Length: 437
Image (cartoon, rainbow, N blue to C red; front, side, top):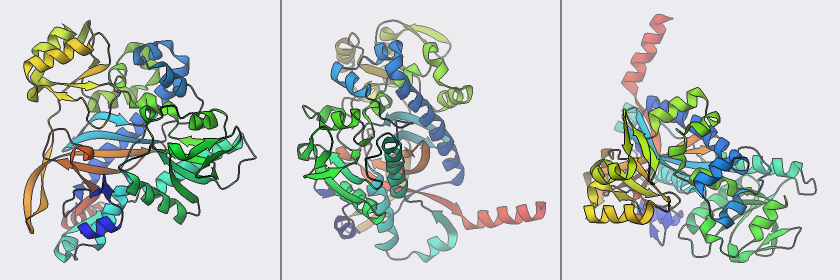
């Protein structure tokens, strides 16, 4: 299995991504809960992204640096700017709780499709499993390519000299550990008839009319370089601002990446950006979150002074940077010494660049791991990471770890999330439906 994955580019930072010998099974009922929540939250996040250029209160709360603010204001020239989003969550039974949104440059779609293919083809058949369970997995790469092309069609409608079929460039910063996934995505695009290439920011140039990568004209860019990695590179911003490329995700999606939104969802000033049904989804699926700063806030039925409350209730809370990613800077209160906790409060409360969030217990399940050539069942912590692509739930990946902060860059593993149902229960349901009919 490991050799198969290495041969098929399931590699991160030079090593095969850790795996176990099964996908993560979720039930149809669980998927329905996740799908409905993803659909609602994607609509809300798109609205916050679109409101940013016109809403002074939102800009003041997010307090983006000047350069980032200028990038976010660039009109993407297509609707629903948050085309690709990974919504990281804990799933326990039928309860789903979202902990953060990755909308600037979400990763994992390509790896997950190939991981599932590997589990289907590289492991010997398991007839007893197939006899007992029905399983289903829908590849996500076709949805990714479709939303890229839809965004391009909107941009081309305002620039009819652009070709009907674009050349796609997947662009990241130099030295990215995810290059193998980029190759997976480019191969999927080629299968759908597109010319596709991978390039770094250093390989890109713009002459005022045409963006080129490795000297080749490109018209559609799948951006994997996060805003912090752009540095002095202006070519993508210039070409997108002048409507010479479709840039996905556009810089405007960066708004959805900011964890302060978890607090702003409940702010009355932004209530018009949520329907009553969406506000109910937020209430059910988003843990209590506030921007870390002085002041009085609501916590359940209480009104509390936030900073003393955070200091006194360390073990039930988590502190997170508002704009960082990859688990960087996250402090779990129950794993942080009191002095270190107080130091984070003192350092970040004035800058208002952190959030405080209620701790959500990390789910655990048994997974078959390979240790010293033997299969062993081990208890692993896990989170699910559903993807919203084009505003719709497209599928999920599951990340597993021995640690509470679960991240591939910190050594965690990846699994495809597969819908599974017991055949006998399915047959009983069919018989009951037939009797009712």
